[in-house]
Length: 97
Length: 195
Image (cartoon, rainbow over all chains, first blue to last red; front, top):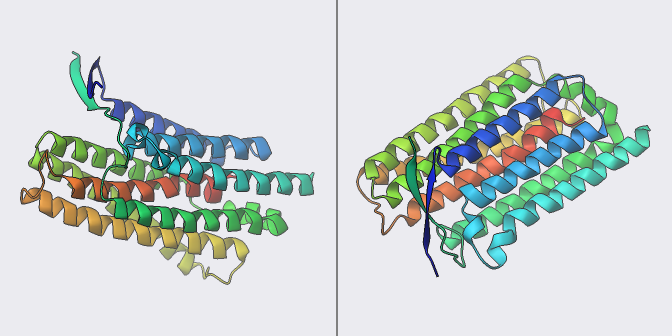
């Protein structure tokens, strides 16, 4: 099996991930300081957070290249609390609606 | 100008670093997951109170802290890449830069705590502040722990203790630091933004 790949690019992949993480964080902040609120805004920023967590797990923690159960550690950690938080916010929206 | 980048993509069975740190990370992440769920469900009975007091938090400071932790993680990735190329000096420099980002986080968060304490806010003020203070302070302690680990790894890198062939310590310290970053990436929107 081929162990390495040669890529020709302008910017290192980890730098591109960093820029994406910074941009998503800034958008999250903008949602926080804007008048945008409600369930969908909350779920949008939670979605951004899960996406950012997945990028950290895959590319910074190196789990993208791991096969087997360890590959899914961060995915599960993001999905389970993410689902619980979503459920709680859905219940809160239903209660106030 | 373009440059060639060779990245290791060999499939592996275990994550980078010492497996023991990953067991520890799993335990830490489980605790934080329980905290997040407790915050979300604890908010259910007092949604208006949580939404009102969330507005008193300093979101700009939280954004800078988020960017600092993300950038610190990026610097740790660069440090790991440097040692994989047998560049001990580069590894040390990147780790030092990551420590700088950690220091920025600690200074800003301490200023936030000082501001809250100055206003007489404490764990018993209300349920929102109980969660906010305990969750963020628990994370704050992990940042400090991560900085101690990164400092130890940096010192060893400076002495030439790691090489391209053996750099498990750098990967282990890096995994812990990324975990600290990962937790904040959920904490930031949950406590400061979602309402």
